[in-house]
Length: 197
Image (cartoon, rainbow, N blue to C red; front, top):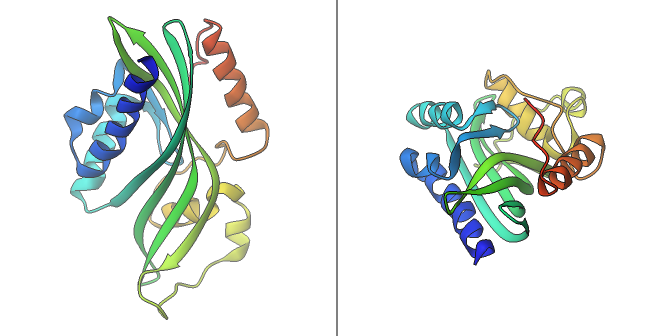
């Protein structure tokens, strides 16, 4: 029962985020919920507001979900869900789709009988960039690409070119960032608080 309730929150998040259903999206977090991505770190309230602003300006992002592995310990849980993020952008006058594959790593807690997200942090495993129109590919700066983490280098490159502030210390398939995330997950299930920030 707990796992199915948690999975329902995860699935609702993806649908509501992409459809611009902001009140429903906000309901997937607890009041003190937080979000960390390549372009945002902060409260769920601020994430929803920033997402709404982008949506209203025409930013097009889609989230697709795969299977979940959910570990429950009392009133706490950690859920990992396979996902892909697809964002359409214009790069050097060429429309492109950037697709990143990874996992949502979610810290859940049951409060007043309701499972909601306390923190969501994606794990970025690999990505790619594709021209929307064949033959109209942008020129890529491979040296600049190589400076970004492997799992989301095309996404970060495009987001930065679009004028966004980005974070490069994000978890990937391997490395200290993802190991720290796993350690936080173990601590969370053991009843310890999440690190600040």
